[in-house]
Image (cartoon, rainbow, N blue to C red; front, side, top):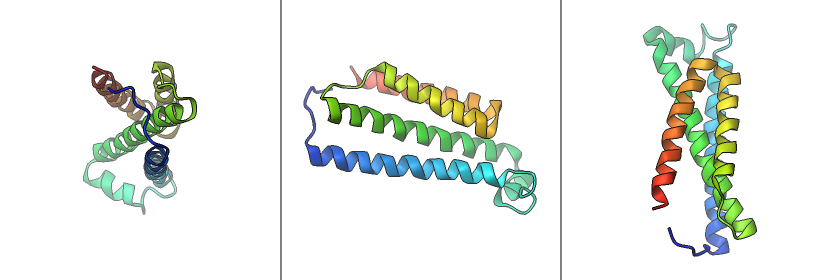
Length: 132
């Protein structure tokens, strides 16, 4: 990775795109969480998916949380570089990891939270391999 700091316009554009994508994945997760409530599950989209295959909703929920983690971590890394001129360390990435896994646990339970943690750790390994 180069030590060059990107231009201001590139950083702002990148931050705006990643923030929007983070919010999109969070909204998808919140929608699935809301549609999974006992009052709505019979008449919602999630209920129809559960009748087809109950594991599909778990995969979609985990992938929504993975997307949120990916774009939120890129946002944090870029904003730290933009604001301080110093590249973000592993502390920021691990903090985002803990926050997203906690949100996933509160919204969907232990199963989706575990899958989210494993997939997010895979993304962290990918970030680590990009450093070399």
